[in-house]
Picture 1 (cartoon, rainbow, N blue to C red):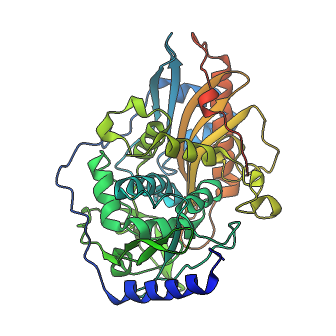
Picture 2 (cartoon, rainbow, N blue to C red):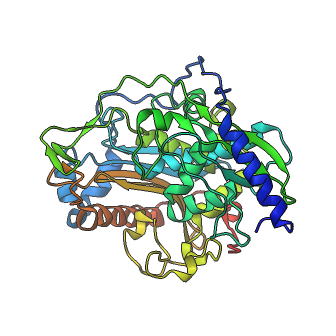
Length: 441
């Protein structure tokens, strides 16, 4: 399975499991008290500039209803132009449409991007040369709602690893993979670190795709790392977060279903994850161009880590053998999870274009944050957007307007901005070789 001596390895697994489950460790991550400001402090009123609105108005066939109903749809867009100086360094110009951090939207799977970066950061901080992204990571269970992971059939040798979880998250937005990284990090560490680097309004406080109590989400699994010979190289005991949640009053919809019953009031999201579009956009920007933010506002990851993330953000599922998405033509297609520019289309992607992005969709929210490059025409830009696709206003009725409203909007928006970039004058064309990857399966 994981090493040549299977019997010895399995014995070690069982011993480690009982050791880690038998003792509840205190959270060793201290709460952050240095409340740095956000990278960008957003006002309570919508932030707009003329450029994006002008571009959208030029395409009434796509955006007339969107513009007319911008408030009800909570449409928000950030477009960042990238200009290069003579030395090749990027100069960024942001443009905004209806940006309002006070207007809550559920961030869905977009919270996976900072968790990926924090997982790599925590590995770096362990200062244990035997624990790398490719080290075997086995998850135990010690509290209700937790589950074990002792193998991963989507890897060549059955070994669960942080690197493989990251690949799953970035290529197909795998929820279980996110949950395993959430458990490795712990709720306290996640939120303390986000606050430390400037994202004080962000909260990532629960796992995805499974419904657990607040207490269950505060507690994370015991985890054991093994080397290639099956020897334990690091043990992380069960953790409990003492995080004090932000005081919030976030709600969505006019009514919602709970346990099969219709509740005639907005659904309370105050104890759910929060990540505004500006913060998501800035996280992506700091990944692509870390030099554009102060050192204290960067995730503490290596250059190899950064390139690893960018590679799998841009790899299509059909280019992958492990995980074996390339064999699955029903559930996954080339432009799967590339909402901006492709929407829900199963068309073959353009070979000269790559999209480095993270999407999310849940409770009627549709979100994408993308860095889009065209190697042939030498253009690059950032584009992030969110739209609320729930015309009946009812949460949890499984009647969302993703196909009729959200995905067409994302596709049209991406292609309209791309065409605008094709016509835009670039004084100095970018060297895109740093984000040109060989996708080696």
